[in-house]
Image (cartoon, rainbow, N blue to C red):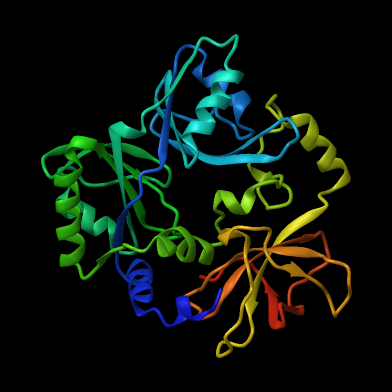
Length: 341
């Protein structure tokens, strides 16, 4: 990847900074699974390591989903819609549908995909609340990870406070597929009237914005466990869940790897550092010319806030420390915190 595909792309920069400094919106409907029935809560509490039992109606919870080996096979947001009805937002609905099917035996629960019924517009940035307040029939007064009904453009919507950008103020607007044009017209006009932009670049809303905040895409998490990527604090150890036995062993022995942040030091140099997000295993990482590989580049994008190429390395635990300067594919890089905001 050459840095210029981000650094010198003024279109990407303008869309990215609209979210950071004003407001931007994009259509990015995650796949949705609906889970309902008398055992819905009990079932989801076994499927996910985070605590679903304490999730109140109208609230959301981020959690990983693990296999029996304790490896992350998905990361999702669980939304409790009613006492016995939940939505699960994922990027891998078909795989999740299969997983739920095989794990639901013995539970009085129904699971099915509802993605085609809904569209989701993400409205993000410091002025996102003011924009939505100007077009919603009711004031948008929501805590983080809380959702509630409203109306926009004459259509029923569900507004959820949250998002994938790291912004304090951000919302997701769900509407019926048949109402998507009317809802988008209202959002588009309001965002542009406020001086914001529609975000059209996938690399902006899926890569550059979330990476600045230290967020992960599922490709970053594949074949890792929660301890390796700093998500072990989202585990409820007082309950049973799939993967618990394996994680307890990792907890006792310590993880073998960790995800660290890094930046490219020379902002003017063209370089080529393959990252896993583009396919393949990612560039190998060595220390001081040693032959032993200590990690692989999981992600490399660009921070428009810091004006630096930034990303993640999945490395042997303790091999790379903050401030270390290393060479990756002949390019000097520095190990830093995974947060560029």
